[in-house]
Image (cartoon, rainbow, N blue to C red; front, side):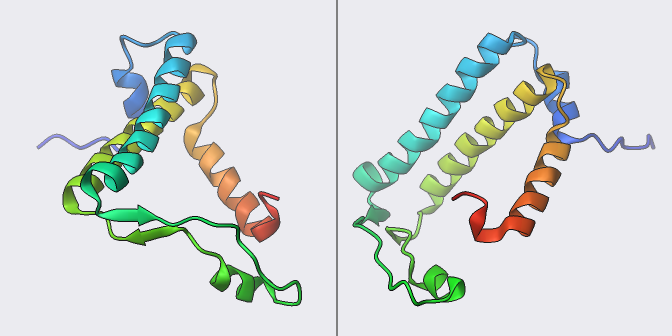
Length: 131
């Protein structure tokens, strides 16, 4: 029995990225993949109805701790994705990840190193990371 090689996600993406090797192609495919994620979410609401979105301004008292604020913040999503919508979204998010990894590879970046660095940044900065 042959030994199975443990490829990283980026190695696998680079191996199968044949048709869209131009960074311009990858950029446009990444934008398209992102739009498809957004469209799949919208269809889960408007076509299927398994989830609803009820959005309004988020308000919270200034004297709360960060942990208390986190508990008060709403996702604005009500319901649970049905199996079909979940499957579509997993596929579309996977495609977006594929093109992110492809872009990283074409630009000489290590996708997993980027993920590791971002994880460390989020863990270190916590809620201040995206402010």
